[in-house]
Length: 273
Image (tube, rainbow, N blue to C red):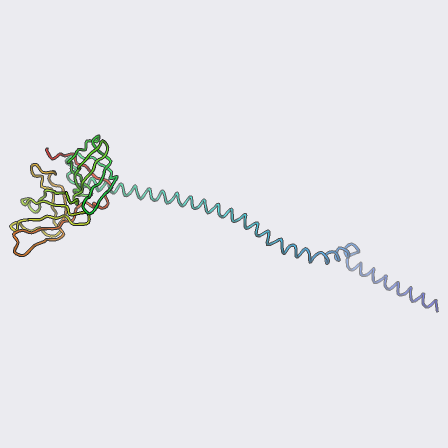
């Protein structure tokens, strides 16, 4: 009986031992088996750690990348600002060139000496219209000299300093210009009526042929007048005729664009000459 038990125990032990050996062999050995068990135990914790650490890594990488992007944006804004500045400078230079070209397109400037001046201050009101220019007595400018711009009469100098002068524009309510129209046989006086108003010519005798709309009136240059002859002053915009009256009036638009003065020509001509 004891012998049968011993044989069964030995047989069982052999079977178990064989299974253990086969299992170890199939799984790659004891070390691999232990390594596999350890991996099975550690892997969940490693996965959780990676799950938490990976977003944090992205956050830190995002912070670093955001700084780079912000630096690049600042550089781009700087370059854009530089380009805009150059564009504005080029546009301003083009405007100044155009203003200079317009300033010399006045016939009288070709026959009389002139001084080109830049307008530094524009101070128009409803009743007073004057500008300040950056040339004065040191450049030969004197009180009473005519000022032309953009193809027509702009006004006359009324005050000077060493390096500046004040110009009363023809739209000023205190401005009066001796002019003529048609064949030059009809002298008239053109009066300023304020910055936003037309120039006015009144008391034209009805015996004089009425000027047509669009016709030009220019300075008459009469002896003792304030302006030399032949400077364009304004174009007729409408006739003001009252039934039964012995005279009529006209409204004029200045030939010079007085709203955008940048440069002017001071004509070196004095009323006494």
